[in-house]
Amino acid sequence: MKPTTVSQDTPWSEIHTLLLPALGETALMVSIVMLFVVTLGGVGGVVLFNTSARGLFPRPALHRVLNSIANVGRSLPFLVLMAAIIPFTWWLTGTTIGIPAAVVPMIVAGIPFFARLVENALRELPADVTAVGLVCGGSAWQIITKAQLSEALPALVAAVTLNIISMIEYSAIAGTIGAGGIGYLAVVYGYQRFDNHIMIATIVVLIVAIQLIQFLGDRLVTRLRHTQGSI
Image 1 (cartoon, rainbow, N blue to C red):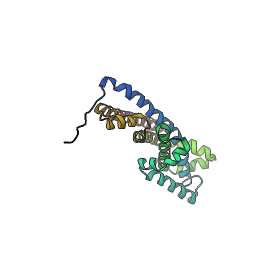
Image 2 (tube, one colour):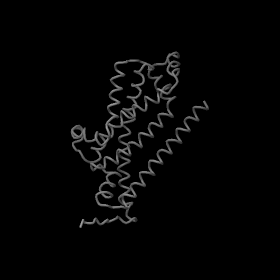
Image 3 (cartoon, one colour):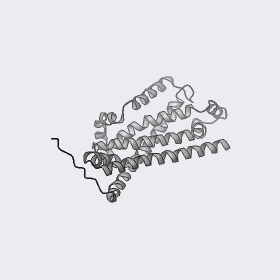
Image 4 (cartoon, rainbow, N blue to C red):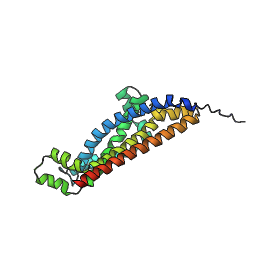
């Protein structure tokens, strides 16, 4: 006879004692990651667009190199990327487990993804946005900030929203290396300990969190488009 596994579910009344700290850890991971992703990925996306044929300083060779880097960065599944850069993660943080070890691959995965989203947002702008800035004698910095990024703001907010959701999903995967957060709770308690209550709770929380972020992001995008349309 096969041995049977006895499920020892955490009482519903105690779920919050595990869930709330896990939520805090996930929020911390995603916040740290998004700080780097928006900053570095945003700069990368602006450079990607402006080195293209439609940009302020077309550099075909540089654009091809940056484009290839962005494509490579987006090609690997996160779990594979996380395993592939373990030596780099160890060199940078001195550990391969926990939040520090999860943040590094999340940043590495998030930067090219966000850079591509920023480039696409700028590419969707009418060509005359940059042309008008040049005719008015604006500097490169003024054209990028006051014309390109300002006009693309709704699309950029949508990009940030999508990236936050992706980072939440990545943080759940990072739970497999003991990173903490919702993913770690689901793996250690829900899967390894066969705790059905924890598994159900983590799934519900992830769904609710992602739906809420998407709702807020969509509302902000709609408001920004309405504001731009009324100017």
